View 1 (cartoon, rainbow, N blue to C red):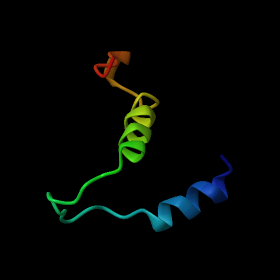
View 2 (view 1 turned 180 degrees about the horizontal axis):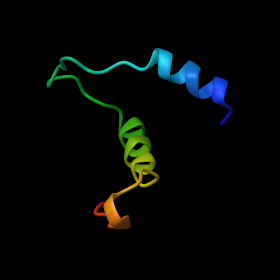
View 3 (view 1 turned 135 degrees about the vertical axis):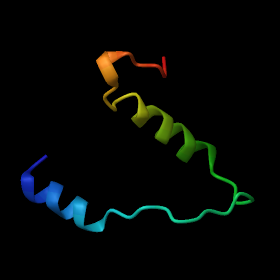
View 4 (view 1 turned 45 degrees about the horizontal axis):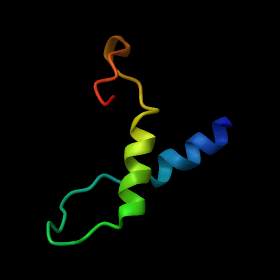
Length: 50
């Protein structure tokens, strides 16, 4: 990732302030989130998600 790409991403980042617990999430989106979670660093490389 180029530095400019990172800066562009950081500028559009948003934090969730509230959510609708009744809103359904498509299985494909949930699976994509779970798959990307595996790429995140973990303390002492513990990888508690495996």
